[in-house]
Image 1 (cartoon, rainbow, N blue to C red):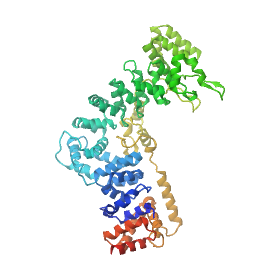
Image 2 (cartoon, rainbow, N blue to C red; image 1 turned 180 degrees about the vertical axis):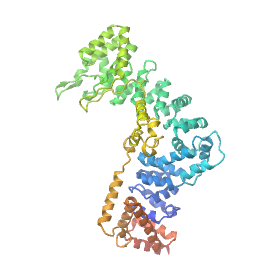
Image 3 (cartoon, one colour; image 1 turned 45 degrees about the vertical axis):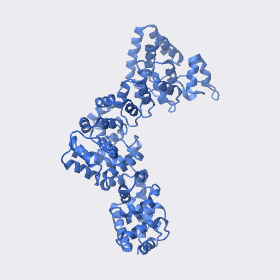
Image 4 (cartoon, rainbow, N blue to C red; image 1 turned 45 degrees about the horizontal axis):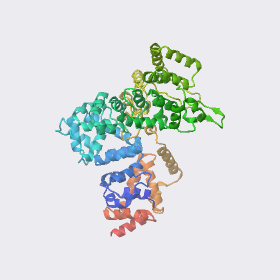
Length: 585
């Protein structure tokens, strides 16, 4: 039989202590990743007796929120449960975020911001043999502890971070003075919601190697990027710029400060040689003539690389580029450079060129761009007016920042530089929070907004079902991971309900002894997963336990033999049990 059916039988044969799985793990472990999902009792046994590789295989196939919620409540020990749920979150965010919300609420209610309670939690964490809830309750009810929370043992350092990230932001902020510096740095690295001054102080106190690790981190929050950029280190800025998790705002800030903090050669190389707009477009703020041209290239219609275009422009100007942007098939000549749809971006680029290289470079950019004649004449008038013209240009730039960027009529045309100035807030959260204070957002809307890593706490706490998503790590960011509806489960439940209604005695075929064992166990597994009502699944599980006792008794040896024989057995369930009982003596 296939291992999916064998796993269903193994779960039914096993006892509460997982002894059967512990004895047959060696033969089943290589196949843990073959089933679409394992029964919860079997996962519970694997968490207790399996290896790290076993947990990773099972977690990759466990995408059912109901299963992970049940595991959090029943499985033990606590460290292994947290580790398993973390692996689940890396594959499917919702399967981690939904059940772990209960842990967040428990930590808030029982431990709060008490450093002694958290130090007791850390002391008990490595050796706790109970569930996660029992661990938190024991730490809350215990005595002793210290105000200075020690460094966690290396064996549970990741689980300790996992629990700290689930604490309420206010409680976590209050705990910072009691935590080791290395622990706080670890929290910043993985996106803990800490105040910007604490993040900035942590970054300033980090070593050069630790700062580079932060700059390349996957879950660093905007406050962390700001603190790194504020250090004014070109090499560090290069790492931030290359980080795919950094946003346009961070890259814009690095480019806008190019006059004070020189760009690292690696950053310049990335801008000039990259066809990725996320790396090229921010260079429009740099004030460097070549980088500005690289940012404004019309890459969709060029016939050579961006680096070749920039080199040719340096040597011969814009006229030498035009043949490269001629579409022979369409018989159409395209301009080499695009004009940003948001006028503030154009004015900002001109101001940066004027400030760094003089008015001549600003005039040259106007000449290279396909601007309307009236707009170009207005800009040339400002250039001719000297400092007074620069003041007028800056005033117009500041006015334009408040306007909404226009949109292209054609959906396939890039929208251009839709971001505003590099020093603008990371997002318009202040407006959203103000509106939420007047009229609270619906819970579902708030939950969707928590998909953004910089979602403010008032919005996150309004998410329905109390799903605040405080520390998204280890769950990856993304809209689909926060969507609550499980279409696969719904469709399977509907399918099974229809089959049970239209096929008389279908559920009884598991125990008739006339159906091949593989098909009987497949049906049994489906009923356990997708039963239209929980009572029928419980009743079927109780009948299977009684059925096994009738054939194998209470002895462990016959159950172990049956589990070992199952994957290669081709008969019916009674034949399998009779063979196992005879072999056990």
